[in-house]
Length: 142
Length: 142
Image 1 (cartoon, rainbow over the protein chains, first blue to last red):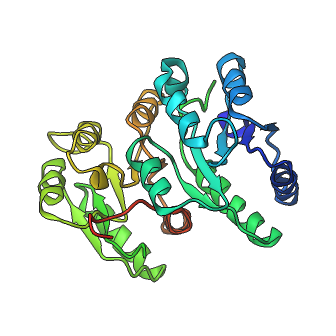
Image 2 (image 1 turned 90 degrees about the horizontal axis):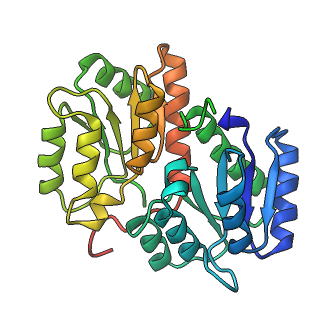
Image 3 (image 1 turned 180 degrees about the vertical axis):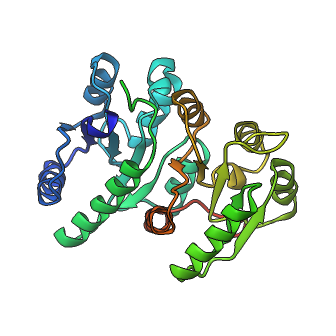
């Protein structure tokens, strides 16, 4: 079941990784968690792994390739496009324009501001996971 | 913010009625716009200047189905219309339909729950998610 597939995080900030990991623990999320500190590693994983990820969380502002460019690259790749993994941006500070680009020039399944407090983070992650658990997903029986 | 209309495209009047009751129970303040066919939805898209908050669309519609409608919306000249979260809901869903939905950049695929409480829970989840998520500009002047 893709609902039990790994949750992916791409973020250059290792502190955010730690926080998300703790939030997932707090929520008793059974899905494996895969973390990449830059988009090229994440891209290589998505291309080669036989896993069916449940959900991708990606930061927007990263030193090498931005989350926006990364998503553009996924959309251009026929194999990855067909995997249709739900993709949500998770960003500390993204301007209005970036949000517009994300929705209007590619498909994202959500754009969330990283909450500041841990409780708020846990509740945001909880509602995102609830949504995708309720949703039917292309790889559900693979 | 995020108080634009919610469009529900569904030819089943009973389902429309249920959505109405669910939204009343959930104290949803967004205007609900019911459209009974894809053609009607396309006409409405031409008329409005402010894009809806989200679109919830049945798959099986008379004449033009929800997939063809989505293709037409993705080909729409207005980016603000193309970028509205587009969520399918359907009584049944085959693997093929789900894959097709995500290939058409859907923002979710929900099953029409059979009990009022389950339907309410689904709707509450959908609304919470998209209210929390940042959204692209809904009109050309915001």
